[in-house]
Amino acid sequence: MMVLKIVFWILLFIIVYTYVGYGILLFLIIKIRRAFNIGKKAEIDTSYEPEVTLFIAAYNEKDYVHAKMKNTLALEYPKEKLNIVWVTDGSDDGTPNLLKDYPNTTVHHLDERNGKIGAMNRGMQFVKTPIVIFSDANTNLGKESIRRIVNLFSSPKVGCVSGEKRIIDKESDVASGAGEGLYWKYESALKKWDAELYSVVGAAGELFAIRTALYRHVEKDTLLDDFMVSLRVAQDGYTIQYDPEAYAIESASANVKEELKRKIRISAGGIQSVVRLRSLLNIFKYGTLSFQYISHRVLRWTLTPLSLLLLIPVSFLLALNEGLLNFGLYSLLFWLQILFYVAALTGWFLENKSIKVKLLFVPYYFFIMNLSVVLGFFRYMKKSQSVNWERAQRAI
Image (cartoon, rainbow, N blue to C red; front, side, top):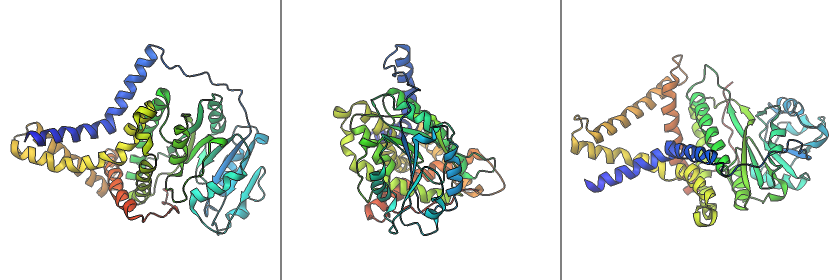
């Protein structure tokens, strides 16, 4: 029983640290640093205004082209300094033709489809500006997003800037919307603290930017292009900064089935990224960046989902030894787990129903997140995940 107890507390520590403990620790470190005025960030030069390229890799996005361009042309940045580049490889729905009459817009098209990373690798040869900003075709940007991102590059230490992904929060949201929205709000807080400590660990593909000179061609089978591109910039000694007021907004997945499809791909890509960026695990070489990377990313894609699985039988055996209905420490923790998963199943039952209990959608989304890592692991091991993105349906 002593061995089981040790295993139990190790598993519980990993889970709690990953989802709550790291955030608390990060918050405390930031508070202490502020109190002693340690690591004060350089002043942002708001007059910094270089020429930039907005880079949009798109596949069959005709339904979003006009809304995206209307939004882009309304962005608060000098029009003569904002170059718009679309790479539409493989598109056969007329997307390239819809773009030909827009100002400051260049379209590079190939009939062959090689996935988003193939389009990025090919399209970067056409970018001549010092900063390139990546954005998705189906997202709208906040009016000041470009300017706010560019301002952060006024510091020479900054090599990448991540914007915020925002989910449209509607009262009618189902589990995917409620859970995804809360998840990204928590992620936003962690990113702000990560950036203040040293660097964000990965950028959101909906909106991020890098110094063009720092772009390195990424392997053509890469699943998480945004993560690989941004982390390799950090590997080169630059920081990834973050501005939550530079944001891309989109609808949540139409339902949890669609969200699961999206997250399985992301999880498979996350595991692939951990393997390819394994040198970042060397805390003696990368210091604070490694600490942040392991705490914020690696654990979520590796040990934590496994710990959640193992905790159930381990806590059951300990509760059985203690007496399942005696409600001692281990039996209580076992029943709390059961209650949590019952809440997740209830959230599934209520999904897309007229009964809206968002509190129950949160455990369901949490369950889906970790299930996707397990399924993503097997997909990665089987090498069955295509580099071509299968678009998840979005809520209307």
